[in-house]
Amino acid sequence: MQRSTLLLVLLLASSALAKPTPGRLWTRANGRIIGGTQTDIAEYPWQLSFQLAGSHMCGASIISSNWALTAAHCVDGFNVKLISFRGGTSTRGSGGFIQQASAGYAHELYNSNTIDYDVAVVQVSGSLLDSNSQAVSLPSDGYDPAGGLAVTVTGWGVTYSNGQLTKNLMKVDISIVERSTCQDIFAGLNTVTDRMVCAGEAGKSVCSGDSGGPLVSGTTQVGVVS
Picture 1 (cartoon, rainbow, N blue to C red):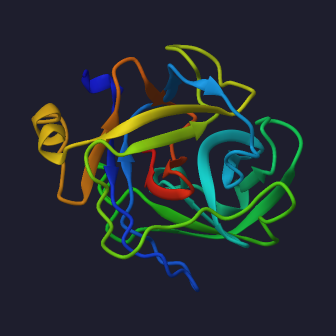
Picture 2 (cartoon, rainbow, N blue to C red):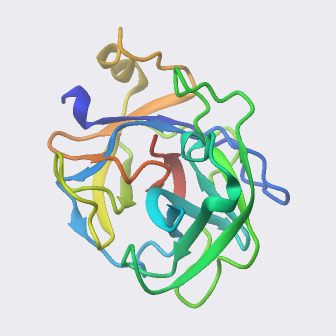
């Protein structure tokens, strides 16, 4: 298993989001769906296209009627007035709905150098829920996915090196890797903290455009692409 095919996944510890606070959930990767297949929004109705000035930049997920979960680096340094979300559609640039962001909060411990705590929540002015969209489930407090757990990443990232963003929603099925193995693989490159685990599989990965998107086990989100 090569470094290029692994995500560093941090853990989501809080599922109660009455007023969302950043959960402990992250990944470290480059964001290109490699070895994936086309899918439909009906299978992953929480998937959002995070758009900056009207163009797709990152992925995100619906966690309540007016809150989205994404990566901190997707919001870091940007004016919230430029951020919107398209949802309820399998097509990145058309269909579904668009909701304007009204507030955004990166985790207070986010570190752009180490990419630790790379998670953020964004509030929108309207509702993210309709007949084609719904909120993803979040894990219980302290959840730590075991090695070998089957997980899925979805997004509209480029499908090959130096390629263009895909128009249609893609998915890739991978597995959680034991944390000790993850630490060995990334030794000298990134610090793999106790909050992080790896997910990946030879020949399958994600790349730019998928950052901020969900890593799910069934209908429960366990990671965010970073």
